[in-house]
Length: 358
Ligand code: SF4
Image 1 (tube, rainbow, N blue to C red):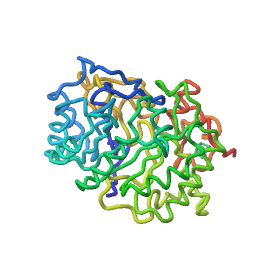
Image 2 (cartoon, rainbow, N blue to C red):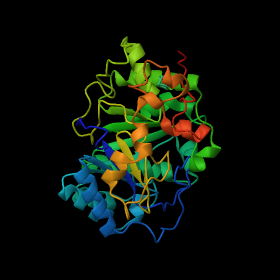
Image 3 (tube, rainbow, N blue to C red):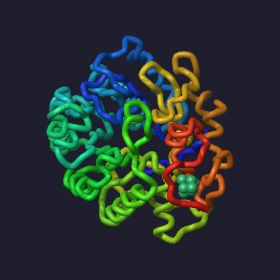
Image 4 (tube, protein in one colour):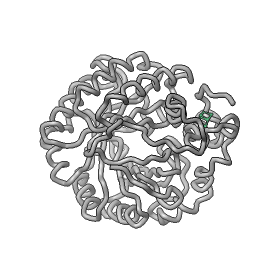
């Protein structure tokens, strides 16, 4: 499903971190998740009000993230409410003992459109080492099987960094075996606990892009690359479309998948097509660019997204600096604003890991 939205007016998707509590301790965790729920989390009532605001904004997709969303017993109520007002609803359960066939069936009964699980290595030892909890890999694969049996559209999320970049081919094989509709490939942004890890270099990212591009020629699922907007430049170079004014026709699977939650032909970036709400209601351009620009408890989401100075500036490619400012791809790419901020303190600085120099 492809959506056409005006990124100056509404994000394509809103990610709401419904809780920061999680039994895992992933080494890359943006949220630096903790094991107890915060009593100040947005309540069910506040959450439903937020979903109303998202609907009014014209945003089609909401993803309930964490932490581990399964730590909230009202997760199904939130999904059902979002569905009742016409939103596409996804969620990202963690691979812990809370993930059961019964809970997945309950999510399905609430109307969830897509469920995402995280897999960061092609084997249990590496994945569990990264998640810092034994058994997480097996639970996640079991969850993927249950989702398949139940007929829930399945997404896999993978974060690439120095520790797993050499496993790209094995990871491609693994995700192909899981009957998924969507593979979201993240490149590490050094925030939260992830600031202790090392990301891929610009050249290493190009190697992974090449593998993803090759897989994309045959995969019947969407491949979405997150926090490496320069993948769009890579694809344009491969396909010989070099004009900055020639929008990409297709990023993702050649045929796409009718069951996937949805996507856009425009590049999504922090504050541009994307908005993040944290567990206590802070409104930020992205979870990886956690600069608070308001709180849903005091501010209208539409006002912040459309009019806040930082949000408006993040949608203006003319404000990019360094080599991104000189780049012919800046309108279709623009680099990761989150990584630029994480490594320089300036969200408009050049993308630190792009091979292109013009
Ligand atoms: S220089 Fe910046 S805008 Fe150009 S392709 Fe690289 S990251 Fe994208």
